[in-house]
Image (cartoon, rainbow, N blue to C red; front, side, top):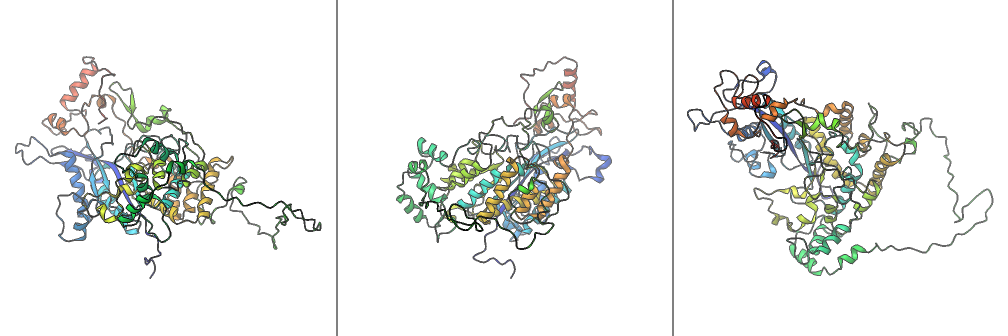
Length: 630
């Protein structure tokens, strides 16, 4: 039957998504801040009074209450949800999947999110983690259902501090094999500037998603090779928690598999221990040595003195001067749009996609960290005096990468043939989540936590977390657009799948195209991310991305950015989630809004503002606490 899985069928790639956003709410007794248009927008979450206090002096904890309402809404939609108090049908598929964290949706807090509190609203920070699923249409349908449920039942918002992360891997119990991991890492290094074009311009420079092609934050960008990371560790001694023969374990779990072995480390722990005991190689010597290459003797040139009608070269072979037996068609190579493109490396196959809009250059974006006019509309906030008080999401420090070309990075990543830990060490940042592609699960620090036997990794345990077996894409900006969420998740899955399944010649052909488009003079704009996706076989997603690129920066602003009142924001001396302070400032409403006067302030906040404006209170800029940092 079509699509049937047989022994020779490659397994599907697994994935999971993380969506970060805000939900607006008010307390019971408060009017709707958007009363005139409430029938045209989503329902408003109203935090009720706590039943334990009959005098209605206390509300329920708002953040916990709002997140529980999201869980209930997803459960009502039929989705599995972990950690909810809502009852489900005993024995149902929904109930059984909700028992384990990796097979259910999970609603949690995210302390990295920041937001100016909109007038008369309160804000809850939310992160939704999807189940770990396989790359199948039904998986993307589940994500669409979850996003649709949230965006139609809650007043949601995203801002520049929100992220949209995708984890890709090889299932719950298997890790990505070393050959695929090498191809995958080299492809991401080469395609980084192209892929970055799909994301908001600030994501490549802010600390939680910075690009290694913009900042020298990993070993590849620092111009280090595949041997350097292991040599450094060998000189420093064994890593913490590793046995004395730690390299034996690292090599066993991360080496290329031999003929007849399973694609992952053998499930027999005795085999691992036996191979570790046999490990006697001097790894430092091996890493420092050059690969051995057989160099056959080249015969001396032979000059043939044939007739002039058959010219030959000095080796005796005919000169390559081929002429087609019939004339070329008039439209031959007409698909090449320009003279520069005629000298481009060949595409793997003709593109079936007819472009609707001009190409977008795929070269590296300008580093805008030192340009306040760029950062201001995206990330800036204001102090009590109305002055710039720094960015809402801090850009990472500028560290110029030592390696700027494509092919040398590809060479060093593909040369990591001793263990997959070399890839993890080369691609990771010292601060785990401060990079756009996170390979930490394949670095040395995680190797010692891995058991060779899949059953010993306790995949049935309630809190088992398989994220350590994945690579995380962190550069996408926060979004609640179902079409873009599913398209980007599919692109991430295909990047890994293509790295695993592609033939070496086609793989290097695409890498060559990426390098040519970034480095060849006159090649800018001749090959872009849409062409790249077509070469990966993602024609549908390529069309989505073409439309997205054509819309420009508008796609990054699903919600209009607030223009906060500087005095109001500077005087708000409590964090957004400091509900006890909010409760303490509550007053008799009188139809004016919970804890807020006509101008948008409660009496305590209003008094502070009047004192600041009248000069009665002197606020030191140096001593003023940063109310947006945790």
